Image (cartoon, rainbow, N blue to C red; front, side, top):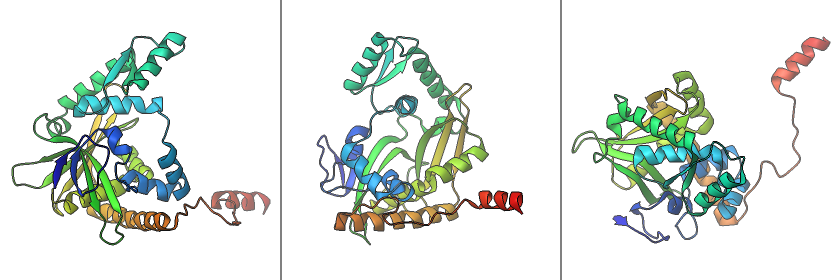
Length: 290
């Protein structure tokens, strides 16, 4: 089922076009689980996940560049409003910023606005990333909702960009990330820290579940630095890492399903725990006092 909706309610599995705001508000009655939610359950706690789902997250200026860059590269997302001030130290600048957020736009200082334009231009010049995001040759921001067979919960995903290499060929899912360091060493650490191998497995599963692709679906990440010259690195993850990500996802899904059924969303540790010094501190101490 493929559908276009302007409503904030999704009751059937399918592929939908909706704003990122509608997607992140979770339009499924009773709730659904996203890749970022699954990672938060494992990395933070079910309690933090549930609290942020109920109360939302306040906008953070640190994310403004990333959101605006997505808008420029993908052609989808919240509009950008240039805040014609050098910084936010004055009340006038703060008022303009707050008005932009109230209107649902992303506020950027003039220097940031120029930065984002330059980032998008660098992407278009890149020999691999540029063709991946060619307008008219892919579909931006598709929202997918499907039922997880083993648990019965609703899962969801928001693809940045989908395209086929050629008509009838395998599906390519492309996800755009802004970063401070797009070197291969830094990206490897970032993938582990943010669980992007879990995201890759989640998105491939989404494509397979709804018939957009098959097990040969490719997941490509485009990392771009936020400082000039806005270096860009395109990567794929090996299948073994995607398998590891899928295993972690299953743990998160089962925990989410249990919490949903019981209404209990545990924190880090609800009892009394024995916490030892880290191994490095134990070694340092023993060497010093031996």
